[in-house]
Image 1 (cartoon, helix red, strand yellow):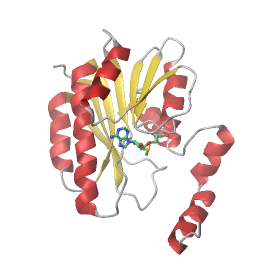
Image 2 (tube, helix red, strand yellow):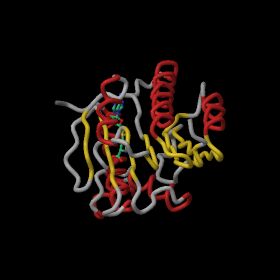
Image 3 (cartoon, rainbow, N blue to C red):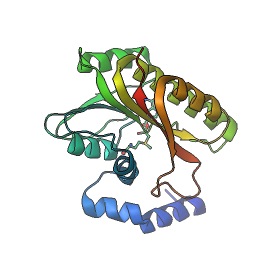
Length: 207
Ligand code: SAM
C-alpha cells in the first residue's frame, strides 16, 4: 500500500528517535519503557516484592521494567485490549478495560492481596480532534482511578497517563482527595509535541 507523505514523515522521525534506537538496542518492547524508568528513578514507586497492575500494557515496555524492579518476590499483572506476547513473570489479560468483565478478570488474579501500585499508560486511539480525544482519555483515567481505589493497599500508588486540557484540574482534585501527595511529571522521553503528562498519586488514603 502506498504511504501518505505524513505517514512517511512519521516513520522517518520514528526511526531517528533516540529512545526508539535505545529501546531496540537494550531489548525493550517500546520507547515508553524510558518514561517509566525516568518516573521511577525520581519517585521510587516500583519496590522489590511489589504487586503491580499495568493497564494498557501492550506491547509491554512498562511491564518489562515493572517485572525487573519488582523482582522474583513481586508480581506483575498486565492488561490490554490488544494481544501481548508473553513476558516471563508477567500475567497477561487480554480485555477491554471499559468492560465490567475485565475487573472480574483482574480481581481473580490479585486474589485477596492488596495492590501496591497501579500504572496506566492507556490511551484511546487518537482521532486528532481534541473535543473527541480529551473526554475519551479522561474516561480511561477515571476508570483507572476507580479501579485503583478498589484494589490499592493503604499508602499504595497510582500512576496514570493524562493529556493536558479539559477535565485535568478536576482530575487533580480527585487525586488530591484520595492520595497524600500528587505530582505531575512530563518525562523527557515524551515526544516534545505531545500534550501527555503523567499524574502520580502516592500515599493512598484508603477506602
Ligand atoms: N505502556 C505500554 C508500553 O510500555 O509498551 C504502551 C501503552 S500504549 C501508549 C497504550 C495502550 O493502551 C495500547 O496498547 C492500547 O491498546 C491500550 N488501551 C487503550 N484503550 C484500552 C482499553 N479500553 N482497554 C485496554 N487497553 C486499552
